[in-house]
Structure formats: structure tokens, C-alpha cells
Image 1 (cartoon, one colour):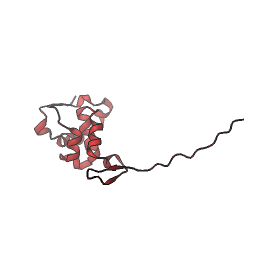
Image 2 (cartoon, helix red, strand yellow):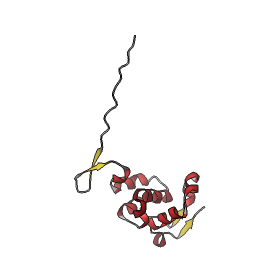
Image 3 (cartoon, rainbow, N blue to C red):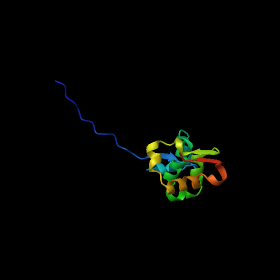
Image 4 (cartoon, helix red, strand yellow):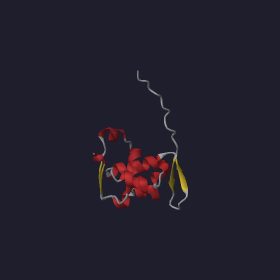
Length: 117
């Protein structure tokens, strides 16, 4: 007869990441990660999704360009096409959300063509 031993789940510990100055940094949520890691993760997203990611991480502070949002968004192309976003998400976007994205990427100076469909 076979018996099964129950195992306790491994302890979940906060992972420590070194900050730019080499000091340990606690990471308890996504927004605690260094800009470089977030920028690398965002590099797999379409341009409008990168901007939405930056806005989501920075909340209202993303309404103006900052170091983290600039790292995440990178050098935007001259065309910003919201048609590249999944339809279910695009349908939920409000004017306020689009405004935050445009401010976050400094659209006035960087975007030559804006596509909303």
C-alpha cells in the first residue's frame, strides 16, 4: 500500500534586487522593479501597450513624462496606432486613459500620426 506524504508549500519570500547604487531593494509589487527590467518586459509589447503599461505603473504621475515611463515607452515611432491593442481592452479605454497615454509619451513632440481605430 502506497502512502502519500503531504509537503508544506515552500516559504514565499520577497526577492531582493540590487538598486543602481548596489544597495538591496525590496520588491513587493511590480512597480518596485527597476526601470531596466520593466523596459525589457515592455519591449515585447506594441507601442500603445507600452504606454498603457507605463501609465498603469505610475498612475496619475504618468500624466507627465518621467524617467521610468520614458524607459518603458522608449523611442516612440512617429505613428501611434491604438488598433494594435486587443479589442477587449480597446473597448474599455476612455478619453481620460488615452489622454494619459498621449501625455506619458509626449505625443505632441513625438507622434506624427495618431490612429484610434
